[in-house]
Image 1 (cartoon, rainbow, N blue to C red):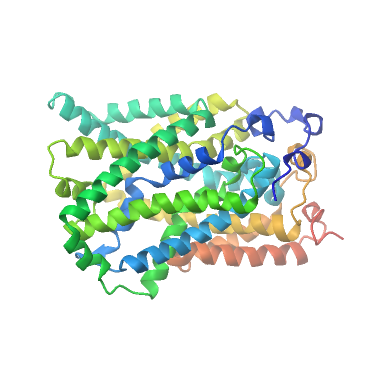
Image 2: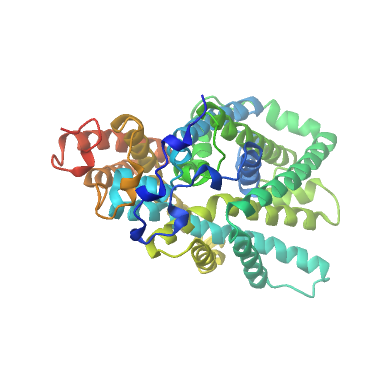
Length: 465
């Protein structure tokens, strides 16, 4: 069944524009949506095909032998991608039907003031990763420059700033740029992967079969831990699913939208996961960049690998790390979209990513990831419970834009439930996302039902008196 957008989106007169927010945060109407299904597929392929995800595949191989064989690895991947796609399709529904972004969706559960904290928990990590990906890309760009200039040029900082300026320029055009950049990235990288795959099959087939395909592997804890790793990798992205679905053209059913996530993520992850594991199996090297250089014996391999890294970094940033924090900055500062997206890029420049990539700070980076990830499960759980259980998918969108309306202030039940879930998640960090989501969901239902009896956030829910 197709979606009737007009029955959900309020008219211009229903939105109070005196709130001062930029029009980019207003509900996106059907006329303003330019991303079709094919563009959407390419967007998620471009996001998923990168060195980071390839390293995830390479991590399966320890001391030359895979901890999961090929069948177990892809079984875990398919299960994880199925769960990811389901959560994506569930959480993107409100954004798709109403056209509101993630920062406005948060107001339903957390309130106007409460949404500031929860939106920062998504925006700040994205800015840090924006800078981190750009630094990795800048490092690779510097390698290309050294080869082209015969060693005359060698300055990572300049390459980092240059790459960041290019990304800021591209992001000024919003989803129009994302659409064509991701299409180009997807095609170029997939062609490169096909080439590497053919080289691996031609020259290293026997050792790959022995070390990965025929490895004993495990259907126990390592199998389920790998599923958790997959889900954790997408936790931040499907949390802000509304930011992407609001750009998708109307008339696509919930089931078909689920496939628009499942198919490209399966293609992207299947490709990089497989090649990452194959590279590690063939070489015994877990670093895909170094493994590339050993497998493809070509004097220009550094240029090839470096170009792959640069393009992959741009692809990931354009989808995952630019739009969400830009909307947060727009919300907090009430700036227009273009100044906000520029500030996002400049903040990424100032995130000190060159410190994050040093060995001495690797442990600190891991702690940083665990801290913010512990909050993502609780937030997504609260959003889904709010929309599907407490409100039965019914909400007055115009009220979300009223500074003195029913969603003004903050909802203590949501804030407390989020911290309870995060606290529980820290008790078992390996399963942090699942534990946080379950505990926060239960806590939110109980708090909404039994606590804060006079809370205005109960209005319109199943707990309204």
